[in-house]
Image (tube, rainbow, N blue to C red; front, side, top):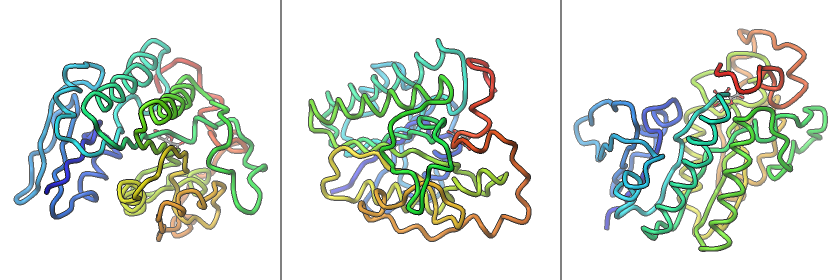
Length: 265
Ligand code: 15L
């Protein structure tokens, strides 16, 4: 039988990275986004859905016949409180409600380092900051990520849905600055990490960091490794070309800790 995985925010940065890396024989990727998606490549088993995750009807239809959801949709940076509340918090509630009603057994939530952005890097210790470090959000965006971790916990405890919250560090082709060298999640490691989250037989509720095996890493890898994640990339190869970071980098959230609250950036 075919496995069907719904990816929300499939046209975004991480969504695009996931689309090519979660392709598997016997698996259909259902791709949801408000924005147009690139057409299917020959032989690519995808189903495109255009619509917003904030619409319960769209989400109900998108969840039909789905085995797991990779929820990447929503604002990925700071925004007004109203937008953050509507899209990131209410939107994730809509996703989890649709999952519950459709009997989807597993939801992977894209959280962020900004849920704990005011944690001091100096507190990391040799094993890195634990993945379940209590929330210390640095922005409304960070608050929304802490809130969706709480929503995920609720939906696991009440309804038994497996929920894994990935506190993603910095997931781009390459780390741009010195701060990102500590937080980089390479695209290929992101594929490995999400695949581990999909493949674990019974993860329950977990919060893990989403980072590569970076020489300058400050986040514990242990919790993700427990799920079977084996990172293979290290940001150090980009160290020579990384631009300097300012003093805000003493906090995990770096520039988010000083950016104007509620202003899109
Ligand atoms: C995030 O959560 C953002 O989505 C991404 O754009 C980066 O800013 C990243 O954090 C980061 O902290 O570098």
